Length: 129
Image (tube, rainbow, N blue to C red; front, side, top):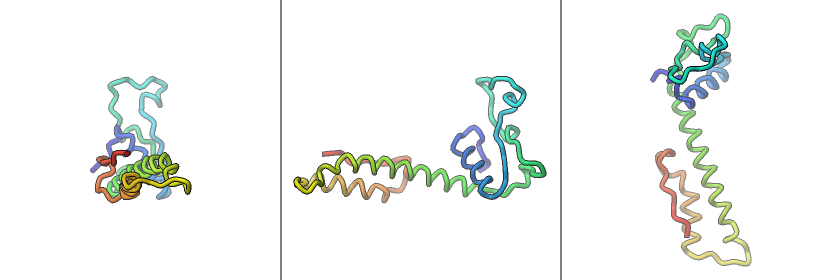
């Protein structure tokens, strides 16, 4: 997979990964570099990347797998954040002066198990009782 510079997740992941590797790349579309607004039909590409002096985009290491992994990690992070928010909304059920129903216990457990699903972009959320 070549980097799709029009895909914001791939673009930001690529720039971050290269930065972590010690490279400094700036992303600025050519029209903006020339002081013009970005046309609505402009297609972003590698010509919009400004590498540091002495670096060529052709000689940078291949990071396709790292980009895919970073996007996947970010997706799972969003799922965990959503899951934690949903659990927090049910914390009142677990107060010492209350007794949770079996449905409430099962719901909270299903939320904790949500990361056992295989695809963070296709999560089946349990129904809140």
